[in-house]
Image (cartoon, rainbow, N blue to C red; front, side, top):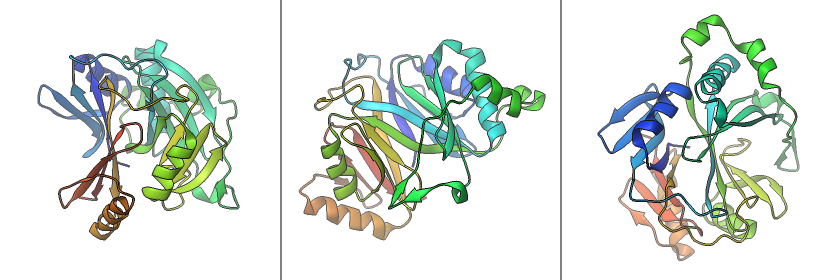
Length: 276
């Protein structure tokens, strides 16, 4: 997965949240757009759009951007940083068997998941589905186990990238038709008409869609929140095959030869490009 683009009303405030609390680096800022990530890898792109309003309740859009850290120590450092600087944004935590996750809501209402993956050798698959759960994960105990004085002083340790993107959608059959049948992801888990998890390459999920807060939602109008989801494919041939598949299904795409852009059934903008 590539960076997630958010349209924001308070650019400075949102930069401060993702830089100072989530512990991403400010990679670029031209006054209307800010890019934050780790090293040279963008994670979140913030586009200033003060003319827009917040999305209506129960509309489709972003459920959360999930940022994966490469160690439990790095995750603990980021969780401690957010909890210290923005304690009111904590929304929960869970052991998902494949990962350990902490949930927050940024100052403009966008969901944020910070997580660490267990080694794939410990994941359990049955008949093509990944076993995931929602077990209790005590945040205070987690910090006691993995936080150190060194990581409190310097929380920017290791790598952090977008691990997956979770969307709020109107219905699961339409999500499955678009993201699996057309876009080409494989289903890794499903919860009936409530949620769908999809991936490529045997990951537990690169994208997820649920109807928990958005059942029956139609197409999105212009609003603050999700601007674009970036997906990275390995080769130009993969991009060409995707373009042919989309055209076969009668979907309009914007193709510049190095990337494809198209809208899902709820007008979430999906941008697919090759690795740089």
